[in-house]
Image 1 (spheres, rainbow, N blue to C red):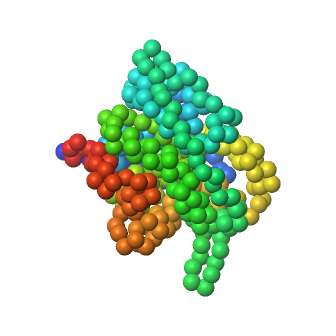
Image 2: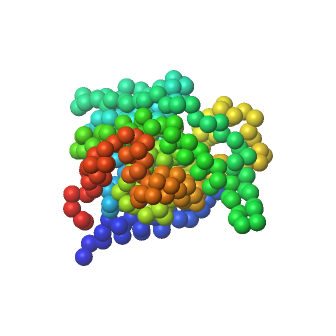
Image 3: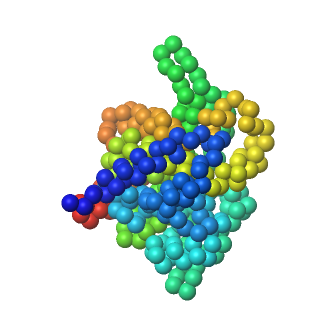
Length: 305
């Protein structure tokens, strides 16, 4: 009997584990990195980093939803892959207007077609406080800084990016056979929240969503210096010695796990209802419940593999 998609995904995640445990301040072995970024769910697109197929999970359709870091350095060969091989015609860009101006995408077209970049203005995010990322110990709990800080940030992301997130789900509702890419700058935070929303809608367990999130440790490795430079421009007062920077800079599954726990409390438990992502899509994004059910069905594989 051939291995199932679930078995393949589990095997790949186990193979990646030593790389995922590498602190961000240490470099991943280049040979191991090349193998990993050419192994599903990663897809190697020339000029693009942290590009992955969410359909590596058996509860999701393959080749429908792709997540990625910024496409501003995509090479012509990468554009050809997106259009010709992956059949992508729409990219949802979660970056701010300032990010888009500073790091504009090239023309995403070739002789086979073109890609439309969909962008929605977002609300102003809450100010990021680096002190939120410092470990905090109370009598009853040890808060790891990254988990505490990123959960707060990601809950804010759900509020700030409602228009963008609604647009992605609207596409899945109305055009379920047309593959899309959604991205931000690193393909980790705003993109990670959208991925968590989709995976939760598909009833993927929290620990698997957290494992998917942690793959960005591998995905951003080739662009660490670029991303660090953006942080320096954004927050010049932050240095490697600033308290909380270690938690802010690393990528750990427990960061996502804490966010999922807190999102469930905010969007489901307090409402006395089930799947938090379904309730968020209904109450906060404005979808009718039957449309939420259709979105969930449209993401499912056509048959169990």
